[in-house]
Amino acid sequence: MNSLNIEYCAKCGRCNEVCPSYKVFLNESYSPRGRVRLISALKNKELSETDLLRRRLLSCLLCGSCLVCPVGISIPEYIYETRANMNKALNLYPFKFFSLHPDLFFSVLKTISPLLKFFKRYQLKKLSYFRIEKEKNSLKIYSKPLAKGRFAIFFGCSTNYMLPSLKQSLISLLNKLGYEVLIPKQHCCGAPLFSAGFKKEAVALLEKNLKIYNSFSIDGVLTPCPTCAHTIGELYKNYVGENIKVMNLSKVLEDSFELKSSQEAIFHISCHMKNYVKDDLNLSKLLKNSGFLIKLEDGCCGFAGLFSFLFERESIDILNKKVLKYKNVDMLITSCPNCLLQFKFVLRKNVLHYVEIFNENLRKE
Image (cartoon, rainbow, N blue to C red; front, side, top):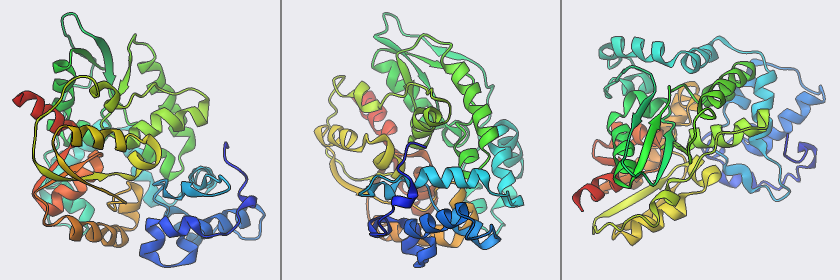
């Protein structure tokens, strides 16, 4: 634990003011401050573990919004640790299977996807809308003569299996900018395992990814997913003291080119981009300097991985608030593949990842 002990919580409620789950549940026990009290009571044996207590601790989106704590308590760190020590309900095991066997998971999903549209559950119905792709998961190198540098890519499962255009856009963009691109064998970053409390399995997966990426001579690792960036760049270091060197894409882009566009768009900044990766302002500056008339928006889209499946109704409530804001916009640019999946299904309009924007405009130039 790197955070200040939760016993120092001043109960000021500043974290509650910015918490997406508290705003939708409107219940103190589903707020950051409430969860701090529950964790403290559990540690001090004032409470015993029950289904209701587990539900309240699993309702945290792990978005990082509560990192505004004036005394420096990192509530997400305590959520991760407490979930790891809790008994696991059966509905958490699919997330374990997904993380450890993504190839098999998405193969099954691809087979049954035509049937998913008949399901009542929104998250399953949503998956039927996207084409699930599966390709040989092995080392690939996209060479560039006299390359300026060499980057490895960590796609993340959503991009790797459900967003082929984003995959190709990132490879194409880096090649156009003069970089050699290396794509090692792709595994899950482990975020679903950490979120569901499968700490032992997460650390084993973590060590596998570290071994793969540290075996190459590269300038750094790029990922279009801020959740993966946070996991492999920060959580790994917290758990084993070593991480994968993740670079912000804005650093690669900033001196490379200028786009010339005059389109109006909303740039939706995902929670993990704003609260952990912190590359949102640099990216928005690049978009504005390129001529885009950008309106910045942040706040949870309602996905949050585990949360959207365990608390589907609340997830949809959070999403609907965003949809009301975005429904009349011509173009929505996101900073996260999962936000893209969430909005693309509902808005059915021009929803793009910023990587696709830069790649497409550079191609036109």
